[in-house]
Every structure is written in C-alpha cells, then in structure tokens.
Length: 251
Ligand code: 13P
Image 1 (tube, helix red, strand yellow):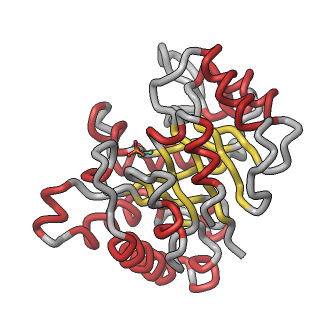
Image 2 (tube, rainbow, N blue to C red):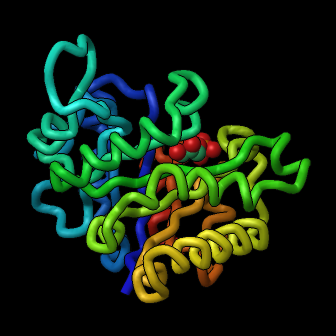
C-alpha cells in the first residue's frame, strides 16, 4: 500500500533558530493527521537539530534537499548521503528543478545521487517536471518520462520500491499558478504506467507520487483527492506552520 506523504521543502529559507521554532510549532500542534507521513526538508545545517526535535513524533521525519553524487573525499563544500544519514535524517530530495537549472544537474548525475542515497538507507524524493515551453509544445509526457528513464531505470525492483517521486511542473513552482487537479492526475497516471512497464504493475501501484507547485491550503484538498496523487512537496506554504499543517490535514 502506498503512503500519503506531505513533504515541506524549505529551500534556502530560515535561520537555524527560525527552523527550530517552525519545527516546534509543527511538532506541538497535536492535530496532524496520523495517517500522513510528514517530512521536513530543511537546509543541511538544520538537519541534526530538527531530527532531534521530531524524534518522538511517530509520523514526522526529516529530509535533506540534496546530497553529493560522490561517496567521500576532496569535494570542498559537498555533503555526502552518509553524512546526511548520520544527522538522523531519513529522506533526501534529489533532482529538484532548481538544482537542475541553477547547478546544472543532469539526469546521469541524478542517477548517481540516487545510488548514493539508497546505499545509505535514505528515502529519495526524486523530482521531475517540465518547463513551460515543453508544456506549450505538448511534449510534456515524453519529457518527464525521459527524466525518469535516464535517472531511475538502472535501479533494481527492490531499490525502486524505496523511492518516492515528486512531479513538479516548473511553471507552477513559486508562481501561484498551480496545475489543475486534472493536469496533475493525468501526468501522475502517465508516469505510473511508464514505471509499471519497467518495474511491474504492483511496484508502480505501491509508489507514492507527490505533486508540487503552488500547493496551498485552499487547493491541496482537491489535488490530493486525485487517485494517483499521494501527497505534496510544498515550498512556500511549508514555511508557515498553520499553512503546512492545514495541507497535511487535507486528505
Ligand atoms: P512552491 O510550493 O513554493 O510553489 O514550491 C514548490 C516546490 O518547488 C517544492 O519543492
């Protein structure tokens, strides 16, 4: 059975003390839907502190927003998957469109990052999604399937069963322009079928596919009601506890 997941991606926001304050508000809220896996995607330097704060919460875990494609060594400024795991984090976001665009991460490099995450027992939240010009050309299904083929299709079935996918159309990120629930549903269903061809129907049916892009308390319910949408990857609205909690409680 696939899980419902709501993951916050704080991006490069919140000082350590602000991150601790936000986490405390979420942990102490006491009204989070217990059937939802909640994930807090914090900057690297917050991981250890935030992991300690959520240690006693049965349904809250912590995620990094990236990890290195290398194991260890002379890569100044990089953070390995093993280091992420050692903080207490259980998840890592891989291949966010901002990393693909600003840091030129390729599908091949992201395949290596996935390997690192899986080798270190982290759950990857693998991001995919098309830019506006691809959507306007009408080739978005092929574009996103290709991202998955090039980064995921080397995985074994067992490895595949450990990952989470987030579909984030780039034109909907931080723009206030969310995909319609119909657009989200049709892409999620398409991706599930594509993945079923490689990994089998059962494995694809068990995969959680999250939607990301201007997901807010006032649209989460409609998007999460789609049969192939299993939750959300939340940017802006994850920075305010009340908004984030309302999204978690939108199933
Ligand atoms: P927004 O929710 O701010 O549009 O960001 C989405 C996102 O990029 C989450 O990873």
